[in-house]
Length: 377
Image 1 (cartoon, rainbow, N blue to C red):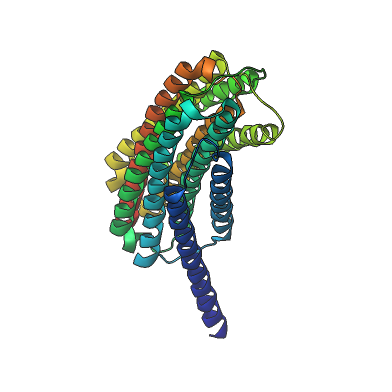
Image 2: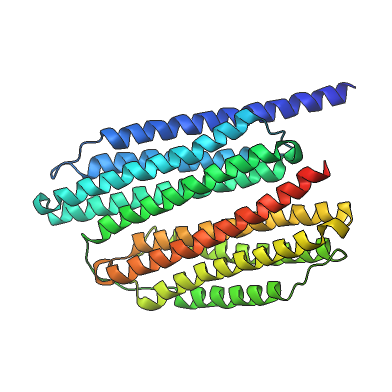
């Protein structure tokens, strides 16, 4: 009996710590939003205020990463936790909107600003935009992790779905507004250098297309559903590891390297986002197959399959996030943005469309899994 009491106390402490982390993160984001709104940029004072905002944003990204690492299961979801999670998505959308307004201020100062000061200001503004995008990615990963580790999904399914709708709306708003911010900055710059990662990108595209082919051959039925989705989950996770390994190399190189962005590299980024969209389409197909056969599938098999679907959709979401982050990192490393501005904008628009389609498919897969888990309780 004593062990049971201690276990319950431990779970309560974990839940309380999570709520504390979520509350602190929301407060930090609100504070950053206020600072972005209040900052006063001038032709003579542009870099220092932006760098201060960058440091504050980076601190929030680090805090999100730490909070993510602190989440352990099982978790018992309640309405307060979901409200705090929803607030994160609302706040990151507000930050992206505030940064867009700030980028407009920089554009207005361009005619009266020294070229070197302007270049440094643009770099700092792009970094702030990238940090806000990374916040959105980390928040999405945190929401997925909370969902996967929850032990009362069935009871909270309807409320979780409401949270996902709010999440989707605000992430779409965040991405569109960040694209506007980057567009504002891209109209102001131009320089030159060289370096690229075409071979590695080409390898990722080849592996991604192989994964698409492998997943396309999977035909789900009431007897193989759990085992087949387990295999697919393993294959997707292996590809995620490759994508994140390349991202780590890119992040490490960015500390001391610059990059000449050419059309091939930009096309490769579009192709990677297209792979994500294709994976999302296959997930839609899996959902149709599961819906068609769920009534004649053993409950244990169906629940195992749904657990795999939740993890599978989370991993595809992480890949999508990594690809968007890599695109931002390559942009920050580039010294020839002005020469490739039109192509970069086209790349971003195509990426946005592909990743948006992927997210819609992921949401549909999660809704299906949640609905089935809820019905079984």
